[in-house]
Image 1 (cartoon, one colour):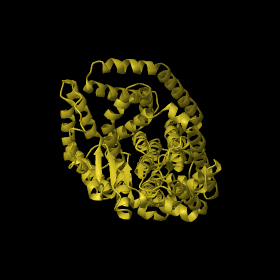
Image 2 (cartoon, one colour):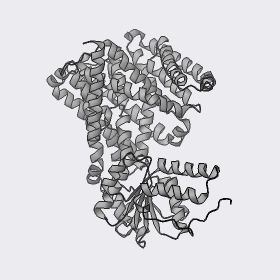
Image 3 (cartoon, one colour):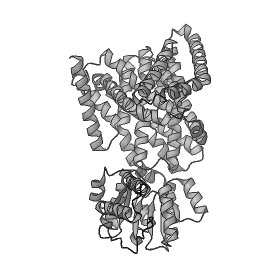
Image 4 (cartoon, helix red, strand yellow):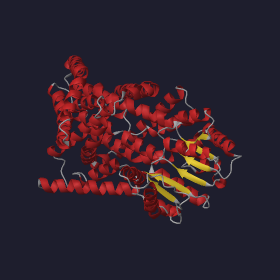
Length: 585
């Protein structure tokens, strides 16, 4: 197969995988894994896992680590330090310790059945300690759970896992040294990493800021993008030259840029490269999976799927409970983090390349990690139902939350329900208060809710995308529902629930653009307000007034545009008494 044919096959497989996952509302990474398995040499054999493709896939890991470094934020880490450095560090350290000690114990008890040197056990423990940031964060965003109590703990643990990859990238290659040289290799690798990081992070930030400013002044988007690629790959090459990994250099490059004012522009520019190359990496991971070995050793693979997942679930749930969380929060945190992760593949592949993980272990472990990640969306979607059955206290806690919400709204009728109490929701609440119109707001940020309640606002902690919450806040008695957040999937849930259980209540939805206008209209939204269109109308208003167009004419023009856009405004007639002309005569 020629290079062009191989490239076309990869692109076709990637497109089909992404389309299938979008249709099934699954993370696209799972699609890449599945199509990699299907087209690989051990399934349909449409493509061979060539050396050139593997080298190209390494760039996916490089850009993944670059993005992690770019998101490295000291204020964010300080704000979440309890979850990151408390719960997260305990999870990684104890997982690695238990897996390594357990493997050595089994090897001593049954050396013929479980032969594993301690170096292999330690490398595998690092891979098994990781969870999937891409899948879990995507699903929590869709389910509006990032600001929930279990969501904060999950994010904290994932952040520490991402940081823990950096020393593991230094540790694993050193473990591949001859046994008598391991101590020297570890010491030498640690010294090299420390010196390189100290050199880059002390003077590197000033140099990076100066260089990016110099490039930005040329006002060339193409030059700026080329410079980012050069910086990322250059630092990756530098770390590889001193005996460290490509990924470590990319992580440092991201950290250096994250301290400059160009961070957000770089995130936007690098995302297409990151997503495409990361997708290619997961396709090659799927191609590496030998299903013949999996089929022949299915019982062993099943053991490697169930035992690590069950162990991580119990360990994380126990650590979360010991940190002071409720039983329900602990169980949810454990369920969300029990699976393997994308960095686990990176560490597993690195261990295989350094002859630490032989094929007899590599393929079964790889298969177990793929299967656990495929099961993750289904575990998360059913987590709430399972926790409600397992933890009576969680059911009581949710009932108490619903009761508290109902108590706040019990005497309220013909009110407006505001879903989301961010800046938009707060501005709406101020206008409603000025007109003495009752309202009840829902938000998932407990700190924001606490501040609002302290100021006397009618705000409650709750998920508006859940029917119980909407009914507790008085959906049947409400005069309208206003959805202020920009997550279209969650907004569609609110619209659907309102239409199904209170069809007489109108729903106004805020969106970023009109891309999903048809979906909202089909779901039953009374009105959809796209921010981009409203922003353009206000820009036009100010521009026309500044060039001397009379205010009355400007408002009528804008009103005409709005009436074409919004159903509720089509019969509105702005009379002379309502629109006085304040323009100069």
